[in-house]
Amino acid sequence: MKPILILSLMVFLLQGICMALPEDPAEYAEWEARQLAAIEEQKTLPPEQAIPTLGNWVRKYSLHTHIEKGDRPVYNSARNFLLSIPGHAEWFGKEIRAMTDNEINRTGLQFEGGRGWYYQPLSHLQSPETVKVLGEQLFDDRSPFKGPPNDAEWTPSSNFAVSALHKLGLDNAPVKSTYADPRNDLRTWQLWFEQVRAGTRTFSFKGDKTIYSLTGPVSTALDPIEVRPAAPQPAPDSASVSPGSSNPSVWIALSLAVVALIFAAKLAFTRKPA
View (tube, rainbow, N blue to C red):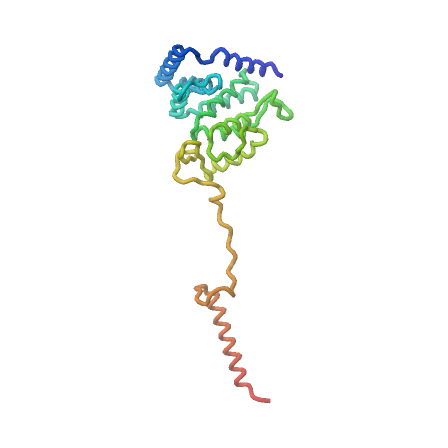
């Protein structure tokens, strides 16, 4: 295992041990009040300062070691406030793209774990903006290393995006499995997003009846199967067309047939006997 992955794992484990929520009821109540007050303070800051802090709290309080009691007021308060900020998902997308560019171009030193961390809050932000940001990341499979993809060296942004979309809580998601499988499910998610981006498919989130496109709520649900053009119908058989049809070709054919019968009858009656 590469040293950077070992370091990432150690940081994750230490975070779970050192930052777990208080067990004493009094201490827990103090922590909750303090954290809610800190979230309120973020409302006085510019978005570019509040978004990363709120995103870190959303990520932290979604960990199994940090699940709150009851209705999870700290997690929900941070998440709802973050969702209310325009550009909440695009901020993370911009940072992810910058980190990826630095790694690919060898133009900066970025901690690899940070790129994956930024996908974690996105997986909890149910909004059209989040779907757009993650959907675009599905097509970024760049790697600074040559040869076949190797998760021990590098995880492509497309793989992170599959995992985040899988956890986002989409209703009628294109993949129904319990766990994300980025390598096998990537093309399925890409096709799904291509339809969403083209405007032929809408989406919604579990527990929310609102129907969305990438531009916001819409009134009608769309599915590519429903909006496909109807197959051309075969031309009607002339034998099955009723005489009352308004098709001109039918009347022409009938007129010619009547004329031919009259002409034949005339010849039969006027023909002299041998």
